[in-house]
Length: 91
Image (cartoon, rainbow, N blue to C red; front, top):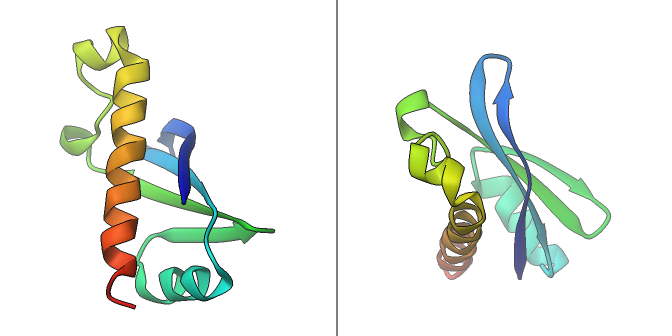
């Protein structure tokens, strides 16, 4: 599974992160679409998952994140990969 952040910022007065996830089987895609409570769109073989955050929980809000944004993006991609992997273990 490959997780990339494809977009982030503000949308409709909410903070969001959009993840593009590839390398999932059709069965895994179906399982995630059925069991996750996030906004999910499947485009071909790529699942686009959008998560919305309260301002105080948004991972890119700190001053350090603005300076070391690449590090924060990489960490969020790893964390989402681990979350989805653990979630798929319950299949």
